[in-house]
Length: 293
Image 1 (spheres, rainbow, N blue to C red):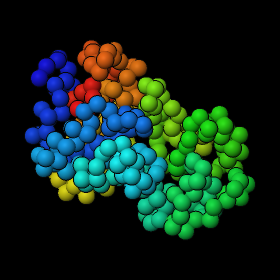
Image 2 (cartoon, rainbow, N blue to C red):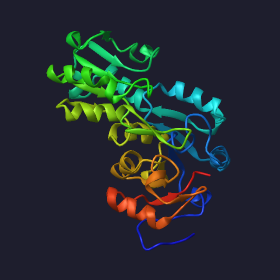
Image 3 (cartoon, helix red, strand yellow):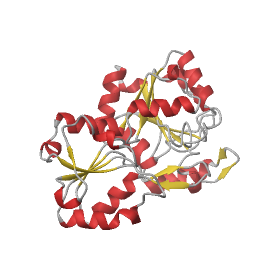
Image 4 (cartoon, rainbow, N blue to C red):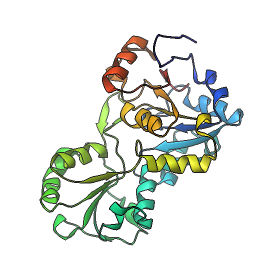
């Protein structure tokens, strides 16, 4: 292991860390896959964790159902036995809307304007909501998913302005600003829409990482001491910040959404550029790896 003069260490691989932890919270986009292909070594890394008897939860900011994420993972080569379950931001938002166990959600009405990909209206089913088609009849906006570039911040700007004029609250079920794409670039994600709405004066309640609710769910299901759980992800703002707030060690994966922010060459990353990025972001992951495997 290479030790640098920093709170962050740069282990040779995930196998070096595995004996220190019993539970692993793993991001998927930018860590396991890019939406089209699994990242090199990702499947093998999960196989090794399971062979060692580790508990693994896929903790995703996806606005889709956990079961839908599991189906996508299977198509990409991640067999169901490689992890215990998927916990998604979408499920977190749905649970909050169904139970109304927090003041923000209790104050929401029932008439909901859903923003999602075409054909994904089922994401709002079973919650006792009345789906409406326009801002004028809505009590709140539920932002679940988006399909860039067909759907975009620019394309929704007029709707957001109208909603802001009516002071409609928004529930955002995916706080990610961008997601990694198969061409190595970045695509807009729902969190960017929510940020734009806040800039227009709108009020947003976020679900998923780095919000504490979803970490409480994961820790309860793992049933492990926090010191024996590590969170692995590619976003400093979501994965690393969320882990720190939850009192968990973290692993930053450089090959995801921050690849363009560090010195990257053929699957390896420059540690000094990572430390500069961490300093500018005000985040200090416990460990940093180029890729999961």
